[in-house]
Amino acid sequence: MTKADHKALWSGRFTEATDAFVTAFTASEHYDRRLYREDIRGSKAHARMLADRGILTEADARAIVDGLDAIAAEIEAGDFPWDPALEDVHMNIEARLTARIGDAGKRLHTGRSRNDQIATDVRLWLRAEIDTCIGLLRHFQRGLVDLAAREADTVMPGFTHLQVAQPVSFGHHMLAWYEMLVRDEARLADARVRANQMPLGSAALAGTTFAIDRQQTCAELGFDAPTRNSLDAVSDRDFAIEFVSAAALAMTHLSRMAEELVIWASPLTGFIDLPDRFCTGSSIMPQKKNPDVAELVRGKSARVQGALHTLLTLMKGQPLAYNRDNQEDKEPLFDAADALRDSLRAFADMVPALTVNRERTRTAARAGFATATDLADYLVRQGVAFRDAHEIVGRAVALGVETGRDLADMSLDELQGFSPAIGEDVFEVLTVEGSVAARDHFGGTAPAQVRAQIEAARRRLGAD
Ligand code: ARG
Image (cartoon, rainbow, N blue to C red; front, side, top):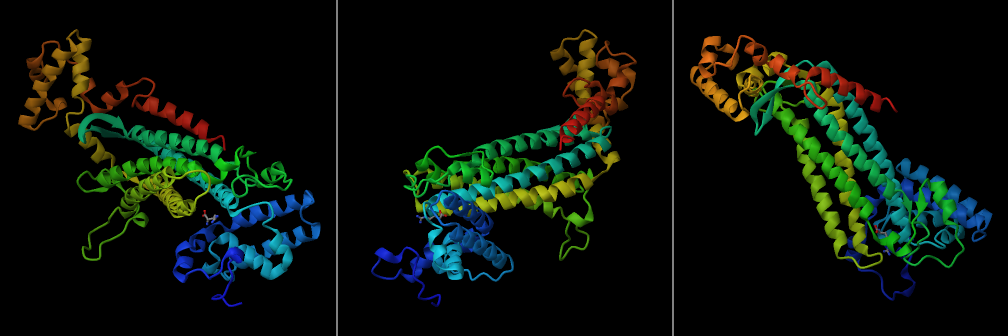
C-alpha cells in the first residue's frame, strides 16, 4: 500500500475515505512521536501482561516485544517511515509492528485504547522530565551555594523599590535565590507524586472485559499505583497542569534572577561580569557584550505562563471522559518542559561563573545612605524613640544629599548637631561592613549567618 491509500486502523464503519484536510488537521504524529520510547515501553508491558494472563499466546507476545524493540532501533536510527495519515505515534507504531510481524501485531491493542495509552505515555514521559529538572535544580542550587561561600563577605546594596535600602552580603542575595529554587524543587517533587499513577487498563473509559492484571503493568512501568477510576484516568490532565504550574513559578523565579543579572551586568551598576562564553555581541556596535542568555530566560518565562493558561483553558470545558481536545495538551506541555530544562541548564552553568566587582558593589552601598537605618537603631539604643530617631536621621541624610557626602563622611560635631545622643562610637555603625555584620540573627545578612546557612544548604545537598 502506498501512503495515499492507507486504510485508517479504525476504517471499518466508514463508507468514504477521510477528507485529506481532516487527516492533516487531526494528525499529531509530528509532535507526539516524541513519546515513542514511552509508547513502546507501555506496549511491551501490556503485551507481556496479556500473555501472563493467557489473553495472548507466549509466541505472539514474544513477537510483539521483539518487533517493538526493532521499531525502537529503527526510530533511533532515523529510518522509521512516519506517516501523518496514521494520525499519531500509537498508530504509526502499531501499523509498523503489524507490517513487520503480521497478525500478532493486530492483537497488541487487545484490552486497551489509545485513551489509556496516551495518558500512560504522557505520565511516563513527564515523570522523567521532572527528574531531569530536579537534577538541574539541584545542580544550580549547588552552584549558588558555592558562589555564596565565595562572596559571603562581599557588601552590596540591598534594594527596595530599586532604591538603595540597606547593605547586604552578596552571599545572602545568592542564598535568597537558592531558597526560591528549594521551593521550586519541592513543588516539582510533589507534582511527580500525582503524575506517577498508571492509567493503563482504563481502556477507552470504562475498563475492559479482559481479565487484565494492572498491578503487573504498574510494577513493570515503575508507577506507584494504578489509577482508581477509569473515567478520571483517561480524561483528566491535572497532572500536566500541576507540572506546568510548578514550571511557570520556577520560570518566574528564573526571570526575576535574569532581571537582576541584566541590571548588574549593565555599566549603569557594573556589579558583575558575566563570562564571555555566555554573552553575545552586536552586529553593529563593536563594544557591546550583551547578557542575551539572561534575557532569553526572562523571555521564555512568558512561554511557560502561556502554556499554563492554555492547559487550564483546554481542560475547563471538558465533560467526562476522554475528548480529543486533550491532544492539544502536548505542544504546550513539551514547550514548557523544554523551556524550563534549557533555562535551568543555562543558569546552572552561567550564574556560578559570574565575577563580582566588589569595589563597585561596596561603593554603591556607601553611596546611597544605606546605613541610615543603622544610625536610627543606634539612637534608639541611646534612648531616643524610633520615630524621633527616624526624623533626626532624615535631616542628616538631607544634609548629605545637599553636600554630596555619606553619613560616615560627616564629622562628629556635625552629627551631634542633629542629636546630642550621638557619641564617638557612632562611626562603627556607619560602615557598611558594620551594618551587615550587625544583622546577626537567624535569617539575617551577617556573614556569620550566611555561612551558617551555607553549611545547612551543603548538608541538605550532600544527601545525593
Ligand atoms: N492523539 C490522541 C491524544 O493525544 C490519542 C488518543 C486518541 N483517542 C481517540 N479516541 N481519538 O489524546
